[in-house]
Image (cartoon, rainbow, N blue to C red; front, side, top):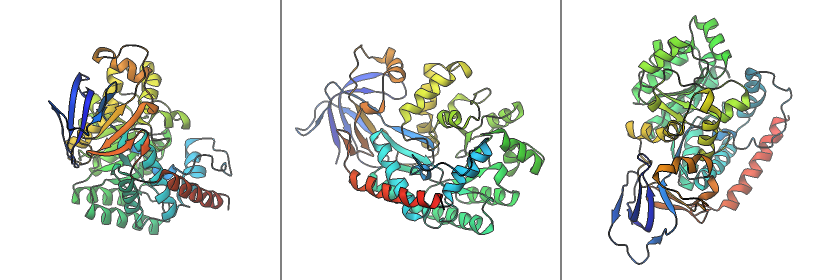
Length: 419
C-alpha cells in the first residue's frame, strides 16, 4: 500500500531543488516516488516539514556497538597496532551470537532513528563465525534497515578461524548479496587474498578491505610482500570489481593513488575514527570525487554527524567545500545504484522537523545541512515505502526490549574482557 505525503516540501538529494506538493510513495525494495495532484483523506500531513532521501552508511562496524563504556584495556595502547591488539582484537575474539545479535539490533535501531536506512557493514567475530552474518542480516531486517554485509577474513587468528571465515562468506553469498571482507593487507596472506578475490569473482561481488589506515599497513606489507598495499591488491585482482570498497586510504603514495584512480573501486572516508585513533587525515588528491563516500567505522550510526565532521576537519586539510562534502555524503547511494543493490530506492525518505530561525531554500540548503541540521531533526522515516519511524519512535520493534537485551549482552561481554 502506498504512503501519501501531503503538503510536502521535497528536497531532491541530487539537484537540491525544492519542490512543494503532494507525494505518493510506492512500497517495495526498488519503489519510486511521484508528485500527485491530490491525496486520500488519510494522507500524512507534512505542512512545515522538509522531505528528502534518507541516508546510508558506507562503512560500519556493528560488532563494536557494545564497547561504549567498556573496561579499559590491560595495557594502554601507544600506537595503532596496539589499539587493534589490546582493544578491538581483544573484543572481537569474545563475541558470541547473542552479543552479535544485540550489537546488530541496537545499531539498526540507532540507524533508523538517525534516518539511516541502509548500512554497509564489515563484521568480525573470529571465534563465533558460523551464522554471524545471517544473525546480523535478520536483526537489521527485524528493525527495517537495509544492509550489505561481509565477514572480515584474516590470518591473524589461525587456520581454523580463517577457514570458518571463508566458509561463512561463501555460504552467505550463496543466499544473499554481500561483499568479501578482508581486515587489512598486513594481516592477510597471499593465499587468503587470492581465495577472497576468487570468491568475489565467483559470486559477482567485490572486496571490502581496510587500506593504509595507518603506516603499519604499508610497512608490514612492504616487508612481507615486497610491495605497498595498492600494487598488491591490484596484482591480486581485488581492484577489478566495481563493488570493491577500500576503507580509509590515508597513507597512499602517488603511485598508489594513480592505481586507485584507474580502478573501479570506491573509497570510504571515516574522519572521526581516524581522529580518535590518531592515524592521520584522508586527502583526496588524484582520487575521483564521485568515488569517495562516507562511513562511521563503528563510532556511531549518525551520518549527519559524519558529514559535518568530514567538512569541518577537511575543509582546509583537503580543501573541501560544502558541495564536495555533500557529494561524498551522498555518493554511497550512487555506489548502491551502480551495482544494482536493492533497498536504497527513492522510496527511502526522512521527514525533517527543522525549526530554523532563518529562511531555508535551494541556494542555502547546504549551509543549513552542515551548520544547522542534526539527527534530532529527523522526525519520521520511511524505508522501502513503509513507515519505520514516527515521531522519533521506531515502529517495527520494541526499543526498550532491545536496549535491555543489549545491556545484558554488554555485561556478559565486559566480564569476558576482564578474564
